[in-house]
Image 1: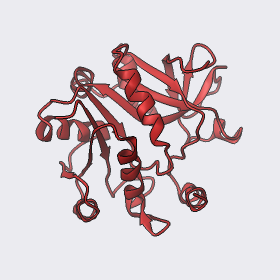
Image 2 (image 1 turned 120 degrees about the vertical axis):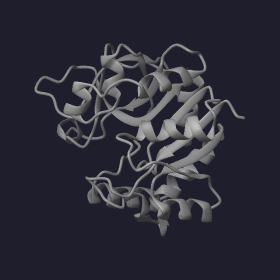
Image 3 (image 1 turned 30 degrees about the vertical axis):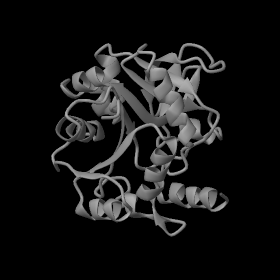
Length: 244
């Protein structure tokens, strides 16, 4: 079995944007665009983890691997762990949690993250970019990550904090990109931790790791992948992908 697995958690009943994975972009469902991004990274096996039969049928019709998961998971990471444990038998060394709502993600940034994880310097790796506009800094739909120093070249830094809003934002603040790479040991440790206070308050899973002293390293990328959380985001990403 390949040492790297990319798993895309996806479900239809998201509170903020129901049926989001099936929204059409260039006459193709959004989840299929994300699946193609994963394939183009050419890193390892790719799976979609979902409780919804509509998504499973769509992925299989497209020729992909879709795994039916429990309806009871509280987070996407729990859904990923089910596939890692039951389908992949705990074998991959690195597990990439690729969010199903970033259809314009550059496949090369997944490679950058995985290559860094192979150095075994942290429990979890993720990515960040500059803000495209000043409005993103105050937009609660845009997740921010704080690091100690300004990013320089290809250096990864420790994540200090993640948040949506802040009364006193730190200077070295970046737009967080919702992709995570776990070592297999880190993934198992993470899902066995109780949901933390900050995680629940801010509705950000990664804070559970920070509150339990798990290391998260952040790498900088120059691209601007858009996370689709609203109809406005969907319309914007449609325009972006229509130009390609």
